Image (tube, rainbow, N blue to C red; front, side):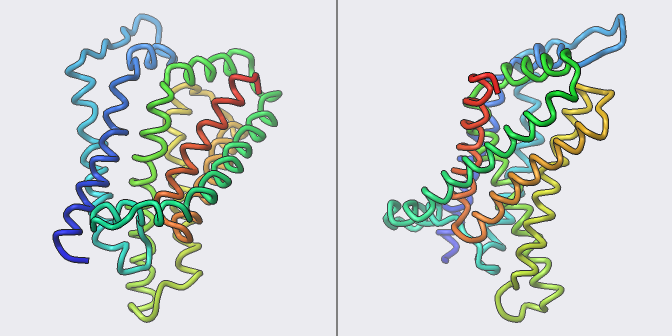
Length: 262
């Protein structure tokens, strides 16, 4: 891969991820913050357009770093973004996308249904006000944000960036760069990146539900870890776009289940 192609790949993936970051401009942050319990007399901040734009700086920087890590390290450890790489190289795209479509869709359906089932099991243990709070929170997240940020940006951050870095570290320091990364290194990286992905959902959980108990925490970690395992496996075996497709489909499945009352 020439330097020119690497630069184009970086820009293509960065642009794709930034579309997800910018989709947060569609979120009513003031309404979202108002759902969080605050002490009596505390004024809920108003997010002006300028503040909303400024809030995008940190995720944009993290995204750029993750994309750069993936572009530099993924080829060294046998990981890839076949469609983005084909676009960067000016090669045909359909032949690179086709092998990822069905696995991505199946993975998304399975992952989404697992989250739905876990939620159904958890529901009897939740207070009605917590269920209502969760419903209102979901309604404030536009589908475009769920698909674009969740599907594209999160996969670039967690799989293309973080998981790739973990695989490279294992290959570089445990295998001493001998042969391709072993299954142990790959699986360990998938597990750790999935756990980090799951734990990344805990801060918003505690902000919405300060009294969240072990059952709620277990649900958040279990459901999201399982989803992360599916996406990590797809990234390893099929390519980054397969994990992106799965993440998007998973959100569609969860949204459909919520609409149907599950």
